[in-house]
Length: 481
Image (cartoon, rainbow, N blue to C red; front, side, top):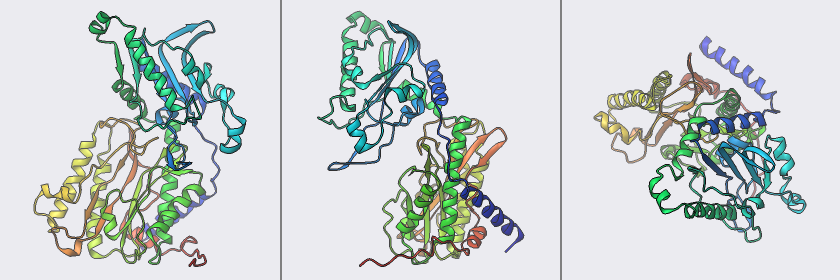
């Protein structure tokens, strides 16, 4: 073992030991953050406009069970509110009524002692006020009060979802809130005379502007957001390290997935940011393989594209390793090619550069490398084995909205890959080798910062780390017949 590798592993152990002793976090984004974001959004709105945001629907899994609720990221970003069946209304210009002046209204579901016994506590109006809202109403008010949008030049909203189910026992659920909103839009148009509808080009029901405004806000992260992303990435990287130590030939894809997701929860990440991709052998060549049901991973390469969601912010980290702890010669050739492409992609992740610059830099290395290995004959053929882009934004969504031109405090991925499925038009020795290496990169004035560097990428460091033991690799349970 070289001295550099020894130093890296020692620092890795010290770093992860620190993380191990820092499991309890109290770092949710506070009311001031969300209030600031509402103010920034309002400043970007067209004059004399109103914006309407709905919460995410409750999604049914089967029969009378639901999926775990996940808030509309835009709604959460602007409010911090995690409960369903709500509406946020923001006005570009100050409004006034008998109670005074205001710029925003929040409509939420009511407290309900019986439902809270079954489903958990609801925050109610008092809880919303503690989160920085002065004008809070029960959701029934959105339906029963005749809001008037007819005097606004722009009504900004997202496309209404068509997968919202109607709970007939709840006359104020999201389905009914959306129906009411559609009626308000219809009334708005009907209240305009024909000449106004023809002549006033500003008069519009606008979905594109809202998306553009939210993208302009969410694409660059505040310091608080960066800290949450760093934690999500750190947890994800530590899970990759622990899997490298724990994995062995008798494991299954699902067991490997389980180690990742156990570690997420151990360190306070309640969810994974997306369905975990854990593919061995030929499954590593399926870009979004989420079945994870191969029970025989012996001596294969395994690709693990996984990410913890921490306080709503998701990491996206991919490592590809040999299950038996040693890369074959063919695996090394492909892996090193992807590694070099990623290194160049990270180097190009600078302010003013674009996703296209990163893609081209990575594609050039991979295409030339595949030609030199005799796998393809010309540059254009590289897309058969490298069929995807290299970068996307991360944040509240694993594919966060954002521009393709990089600016300070964006957080992006750099993730080149090569996938050679069985039956490909090349020497069979390359078949069933799928490699992707993905890191989360913070864009700064001083250059790119790799937030996921705790998880090693170099072959010699990975192989040395895989010689270590993990209690998660030795964990034994009784056999169930």
